[in-house]
Length: 85
Image (cartoon, rainbow, N blue to C red; front, side):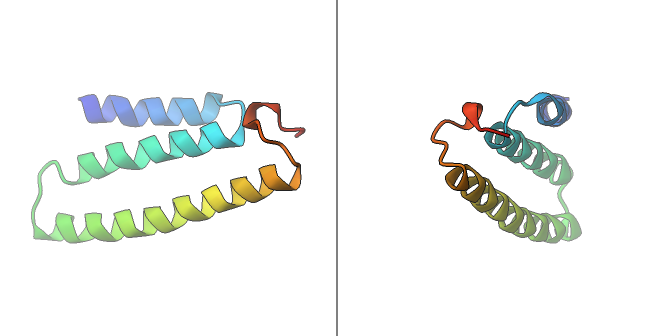
């Protein structure tokens, strides 16, 4: 139940956030909860699928963080909450 609530919190936070960096944070909360839900009843197939999921998720989140950093750097904005977009 706690993992489902954490995942729902991540979804709600992603929709209600005001800037890109907080969107990244909420996108990081969702996969942690979903990974926990995937391995709740672990068997060999689920563990292999979970490992692939985590690896692909890390590639996505690192790319997202890089893009967010480039956007904030391009606007010369040190404070994400005050970005001019």
